Length: 403
Ligand SMILES: [Zn+2]
Ligand SMILES: [Zn+2]
Image (cartoon, rainbow, N blue to C red; front, side, top):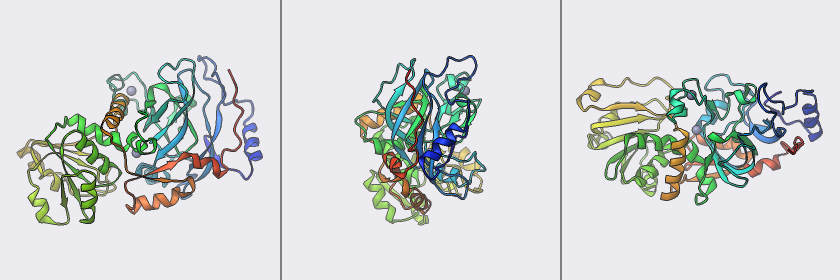
């Protein structure tokens, strides 16, 4: 069974491909488990068929519902830089085709028999992970993003719940996810603007919380993109004074509009010098190689710098003298656990925090990727998943068996 394939010209051919898979019905359950209560289904999606293909319409198959599974009608999915790297093969070869997307918001369509936390029509979300071992020390501590055995990412991971098939992400009409990895999205949040909270939001919220930011503390944010703009909003909502570091003076006004108290234009060495020893915490969202020592110098005693993006090249080494002389920490952070992600969503609802977004249709995804790479977005693109239906992909859906 292929996890996805290019849309054939005409729904009849798509259906024939399904039949050609023979007696291995998609609803067959692994040995030892109760039979899946319903059959799987085909849905329209957008994804890459190779590192060079760009994003094209696809039909993918979602697994049959297991008793603890939730099937979600996807309304919106944020476009993350990881999606660009993955679909363009910049992080190595992938199982193709690959449907990206891990900032998913939608409504519950169906639930398995044992699902107790969610009901049909609930507004829900899915972030970067869809499963983990559930048994290791880190999973038991609720930090599933650090699962010792490796968690199952929302796309491009081998899925033990689906015979090892690669997971496929949120640029699709629907997704099936185990209840434990489904998040409740408060109805008071705008669903499109909430989608980027599932990756960009939790990625910046988690280090702010881990550091324990308190009202009046001073937080620096390096870079004003998808992550950075949410870091500014979240830190402000926690009561911090926020300084944004940006290369271009024009971004200064945009930073202030987001709530930043101060802006340091990093191309001006005197401005950086003036910011020395002024901050308690720096959230560094820049993925391009850069000199973190410049930002470590802005920290006061016991300050910390959290690096959130994986640099795309070699960086200048950290000067240990800077760390030693002010007991600084140079740290990293990776999304957040499921419980913390739920906490973040509730925090955002309470404080009115969501992403600034530009909605795109499915056939605008490639252009949106180019604009993301060029830094031409304020601040996050979000796919309107209802536009997938009009692409012709997934028009032949498998029969949905009733229990
Ligand atoms: Zn992401
Ligand atoms: Zn684990």
